[in-house]
Image (tube, rainbow, N blue to C red; front, side):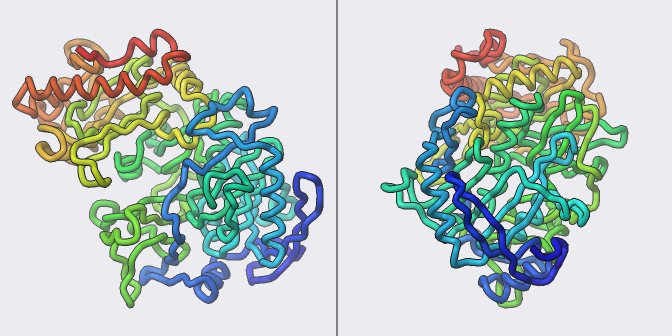
Length: 541
């Protein structure tokens, strides 16, 4: 193999063995520079360059993840630990081995792009990964999103996990026992991830996230989290959990606090928080420089735009969703000015659960007990609004355990118990933040103003909301959470969702309706959750 830090395109060979130890020689372009990958994608892969310098590509038929086509191999490592079901679907070792060999045969006529990278900023948990991609732009994504070894580390690099990403390889569902032609399959015994049939780069990122969500808690007692994180001037860390559209990226981007990361983190036994990644993967639909200045400024040379619409001059129309609403950009962390280096925070003191409650019921901010925190963490609630999907004519509750169910191989209660324990040991405050509607449900009320939400978070971080007692908090009669009675910079009427409705009967009818969906959703977890956690459920009458 040539020098591993060589930046110009070159071809070398890698030896890969399948499950039967049969050797395969794979031709690769190894560890190409940013410029080389961009140049190759422009010349050979139909990529375009935006006027801001970013590379723009189409990911093909798939413009988002396909969670129903993600599998975990059932073996001695996983059989008694993975929470098997609709989310974590099992795959037979023999079927994996056959598919792996078919993929290796498929790429014999191709030259792939190889990149050696790390996951986990904390060196105690660093995981080495070799990623082989069919496309140069997919390799640029890997370069952006993972941690890059320096030249000395590359000379002696030894990978623990192998990711094989070949969108042109399509499975035969009948012969290969997949659900359809595309698939992502994780094998913990062989430490190999196969991704075929889909060019959506998020499959690469989330497959490694799934691996870490299994290995870190079972081997290192580290809590893996689908959250963003930032750090204050005193070194205190804050975590922001939330599903798509709840404001996770927006609210963690704070000019007074350094960004640790925007999506995937680990919480260590000694109360440190570290980023799994070396970059950011942000949605750009309706992106503007006014509302998201950091993300907008980060989209420059080296960034990878996915499925956006551009004019003939390379100007991106971020409001055009004709390809997909899931338009994306990946860029390395150093494209953001205010970042924590290294991506490790100390002294976690505050956790924020973000939800866009389209029912207009939940308070804009409320404080949770450890039991309530575990309950809401397991629930992972937000809401879909009318018009976002065909047939949705009123708010629809949406639950995703641990705010990231598709990536969590263990039972959600396992992660929730770890969170509750960390809250108690480290005296962490957990807050439920409603970034959704007030004054009525979607269609009648209005979205809570972003400046108010920012003010509430700042007040929580600074301690301005006061101690947890009756004179400073009101207990919500349905959800049992503690609503602050006052908050600097926020009108008192905004803090009480009931008051914003001006119709108590209609408000409580909606509140009990939402509470019932929480209870119904939680039935899945009642057999393993503790009585304390179950008792934190909202009232339904």
